[in-house]
Image (cartoon, rainbow, N blue to C red; front, side, top):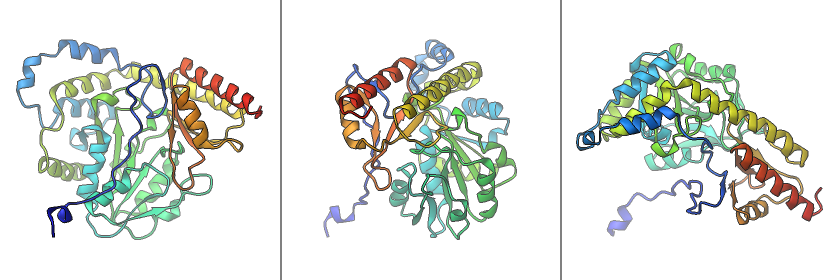
Length: 355
């Protein structure tokens, strides 16, 4: 047996393309089209670079306190990590140890099965309904844990809080993770439920609504016991995961609630306008509660349109997977960016006699 036979081999997650070109409209990775809070720039300007020679606070206490104050929970109920992917991976490693299959949707964030494979966790995919909505009955079977993206990605649909609570209540012998990466664009968070259910962990990110994807900040809110176990795993893996500057910028960002509401409001308004315009062009899509639309057209091949848009310098996301290979996920950008998209689509369809 060679050394290579002993290597853990996995199929990695494929992130959205990050092109080096600057002359494009980038609508493929659900980043915020607006800059972070001005208070983040102030935090960067005030930062003492001499601190970089010292290890950061492993507990990221300043950021944890800011989040606890914002969401009105105890600081012992908050966990932070390097993006929500780091938080979720640590949660998989910590909680999903029963040897029973964990449950998640067949059409959802494609990192879930990657983590399960990496950590040797059995899993079962529960099929969404034909309209891509969640079927709560799928999550009432025996399991080793549950993770639900809500709103879901890439579909954009939001399950109501009553359905989430029903699932959490029925699975009190398992940890239920609700991944709320997109909740700030019109969704209703499950964070208030953590006071009622010790087995519920809610995960969010600064990458979408807080315009800080490049700084990598994610967090979780849960019961004190859940968070304590998560911290134990983190401090057994890598204590110093978040650097000084990120902690300072994260704290400044979460404390500027006015700006946060301003930019999310802009994105929601643009999304609702673009829904109407896309519908007028014959596109179909679930009623998104996120910063993207998941669109299909009965007369246009999705991959063909994806390539045509890319040629034009408009990048969207295409998933060549069962059930969704005729859909494109389109991030909501600025009004000007979306106007350019709609203009291209009108011309594209006119040239092919679709309109």
